[in-house]
Length: 394
Image 1: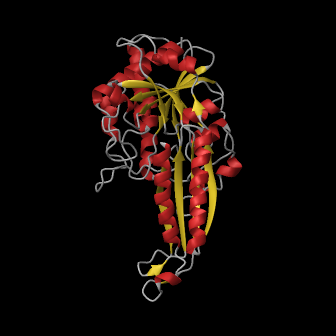
Image 2 (image 1 turned 90 degrees about the vertical axis):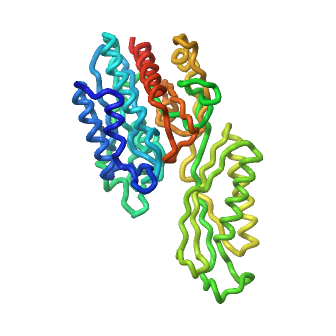
Image 3 (image 1 turned 180 degrees about the vertical axis):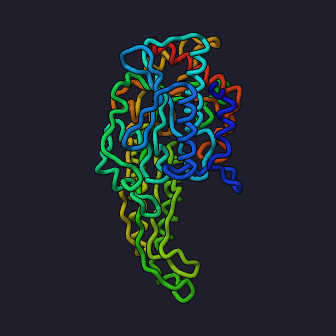
């Protein structure tokens, strides 16, 4: 007998959880994520789902019924560093539970249904978000991906076989359920919502160069300190994004030589920028870069900016979104935008009609141990996903 939603969630709760922070460390191809993948395989076996994998580690458990283009659902199991419990796993658990709901209703879909697990969605290990779905859709090449390295210098090509993927060849539609990463549904008083679009966003590496020196003997006016240039840049990015109503975050910094009593010689910082339009994103990043370049010239430091990944806006098929949102017991579900990237955005951009369901997050906090969803809302999400799969698979 397959485990129900509450049992599955209870089984996942301790895996990869930090005793200190309560957050999760489920980076791709590490012991916690491998344990989660083993759990997924067990759950598929309990439901007699045929599991298919590709050369990059992506998985799909197929309910082999009907014929024609398949309906795919699912999400991911990896996390950001010290992340929350719900981002990713909620979609996987809900997808398995939705299959159970359909079977309990006696539904026999006319099209195959698959439950997916995409690898390295967060980009927390190899630096490129949605890496698994990018490779599965062919929007990122294996030649480029194999050279990506984690913080310890391990190449992506050293941990996966690599090659090509036909995992999505039969997929006609993709539906991803996800915890909302914001407060839109809280403010609306709705347990579930449907995505209209994903904001364009990008990750940019800022390399600030300076001159290492002694923290005690070097006069302040004699320094070429890249940390000062970085600090000014981070403050300036915050101000520019606030004034424009957009998003700019420096969340990761590496310092060389990283000594308490030394002026650093180099600072590398990563900017995450997200905007309502692609032109707004370009303007924001250009403005931050211009301000940083001007500051570097005054500090006697250098600056090089590299766009590591830039994702354009994704507008989900409005007809599909309306179909997913319409005619439910409590009326239509709200259709809302999201500022977070998702595998659904990658599949949609690659030409696979895609939709997203969001489950209310009472804290509005994500990528943090405070990320949350109440059990009753999660169960509403399962029912909503089951309703959606039933509609799309007929």
